[in-house]
Image (cartoon, rainbow, N blue to C red; front, side, top):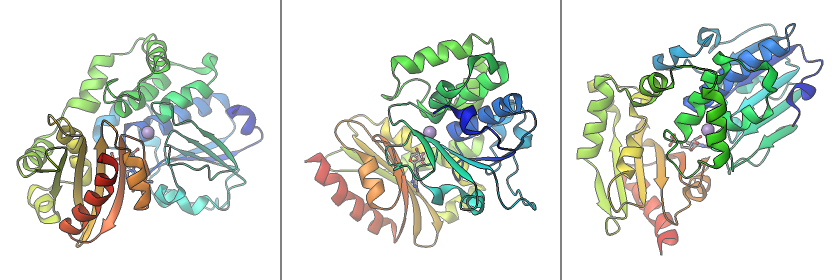
Length: 316
Ligand code: 5GP
Ligand code: MN
């Protein structure tokens, strides 16, 4: 995809990503925002996602994000959807999708079946940010764009640790850090540092976790009343599933939290042979082979029972 060519003549551009935005979503939206501001000086560019968590304050212009953007513009010349495998995860921005003159999709989820007018989907890319970097003209890159893109790669690879890291990923990072920013500080501040509440939630989830299928699976949950007691938000629960997955012998980790009574948001992580994107897609979610998610109605036990069957089919 020649991104700037695709955007030729576009004057009003909406950039968005998925609900509950993570580092890759925020990094790709902000990296592309800063890039297009330089490349298309006359265009109006609106970055529209939910308000990012405070640790992303190190990204320049992060305050330009308009979470509740409302205007007379009902028709955008281009709608660019980043890091989202389906349009139903665009949240508030979805209302601008159908009317946009051109819908451009940039994503790296295997579960993305290409629902735009122009699509750049590469499940081999570690992150949307890595993919996006490949679409950018090097002459327009700068330190601030590099920081945003770097954050996305770092977050989606678990700090360059997951199997989605390829030689291209490390080459991309080499190029990015050559812009000269304090990357150890950025990794600590945006990825490793946890608030007291976040650590308390992690502790609860680990202590209350249950192992099953001969120790190959682990599951834990946080209910709404626990979240209320600690004053925790869904953002405070990010990363718990990865820590569950770190348990020795575990091939599949499941973490869920209550969205509403009898309704759970489920996160899956795997190693070995289990493809969790297939399981998530079966339950109308999506994701990657080793990291995926979905929402499901029912009790905790309903969710675990359903998942046990799906996992058992792949484990055996
Ligand atoms: P997480 O478990 O961290 O929320 O998400 C893991 C991966 O699965 C991410 O790439 C995320 O985009 C995807 N994912 C999580 N939940 C959903 C969902 O409900 N629907 C879809 N389509 N993808 C999801
Ligand atoms: Mn991503």
